[in-house]
Image (cartoon, rainbow, N blue to C red):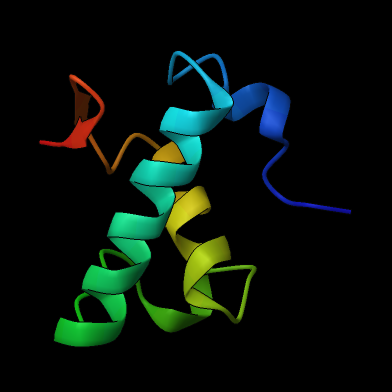
Length: 69
């Protein structure tokens, strides 16, 4: 089961396409710059895609016009 639920994330962004774009961009930032907003123990996911989704759900990522703000 995916955590967090895609249905919850779609309440934050306007479409599945925007969700994919935002999460992919954030995941790339995490990987390239080793920039995480939570401690490693606070993430449920071990992969950057899942961690980006968790940050989005917790309100740590702000989305403006389909881009990370």
